[in-house]
Amino acid sequence: MFNSLSDRLTATFKNLKGKGRLSEADIDGTAREIRRALLDADVAVPVVRQFIAKIKARALGAEVSEALNPGQQVVKIVNEELVGILGGKTRELAFAKQPPTIIMLAGLQGAGKTTLAGKLAYRLKNQGHTPLLVACDLQRPNAVNQLQVGGQRAGVPVYAPHPGVSSEAEVATGDPVAVARDGVAQARQALHDVVIIDTAGRLGVDEELMRQASDIRTAVGAHEVLFVIDAMIGQDAVATAQAFDEGVDFTGVVLSKLDGDARGGAALSVASVTGKPVMYASTGEGLKDFEVFHPDRMARRILD
Ligand code: GDP
Image (tube, rainbow, N blue to C red; front, top):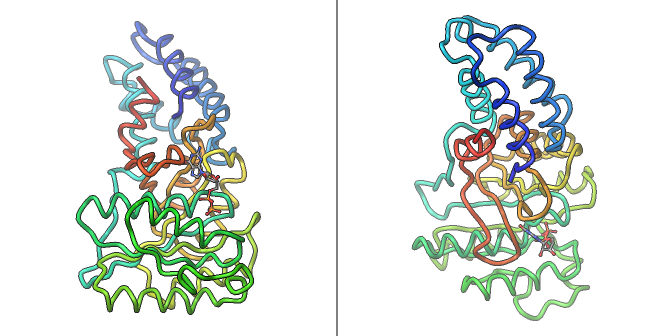
């Protein structure tokens, strides 16, 4: 993750080593390098601009001018700002006092929601929880089956419109809000302590999708709404994240497909424009390719 960004910043800071104090020219040069590195990592342009302005303001302030090692001071500032934007501390799921905890997944089609549902269920099961998966993606042909396969692999039951026997036509005419409500009722009855609801996505953001997701959120009283975003999304990260933030007011972000070529700049973009923490990273198609996102580790990795 962030390899290129990390490499560039490392090179930048090497140049700063051995200098007594930072001049304005040093800071400008560094800022230029950081800007380039962030843009190369596909961080959205307005986010980069804001980040650089913050770094410059802080680096030119008293802390740096009085510091013994200005280079390290800039590293510290960049590190603090990165960690801050990425959500500060690691944030894990907040479980409801009164089970079941209801977790809903939202995002564009192909973002990795259904895959994530299986991974999250597997992780929670291994932690001693008793999750139930609920298939509310009734738009995409085969999404219900895909969730059922994921559930089977994870050893976690799946609530679907007509478990096991749905034809595509039956699924397409179903009402996802009703399915979500029924799924949660089923979880209560069978004493599942967590419900994971997979929802439909579109190729682009659209109003109907957002209304449906929002209706599901309200109908079941979701405790966590995880916005799943493909790490490869690039500059579209900002508009997509803003639309989902307004539409479903998500509580956390999952960055998917971090095993690909993506440099992870989307994490900075989304966290920066929504103020919501990145909670997990998805790193492959397997059930175990999933990790808790550590802002501090990520920032250290960028700077090491
Ligand atoms: P959904 O439409 O949001 O439910 O997306 P899916 O879960 O169906 O994922 C879309 C495609 O991306 C599928 O082919 C998945 O196997 C793949 N995929 C999902 N997550 C990851 C990931 O973290 N890494 C990789 N390499 N592929 C992934």
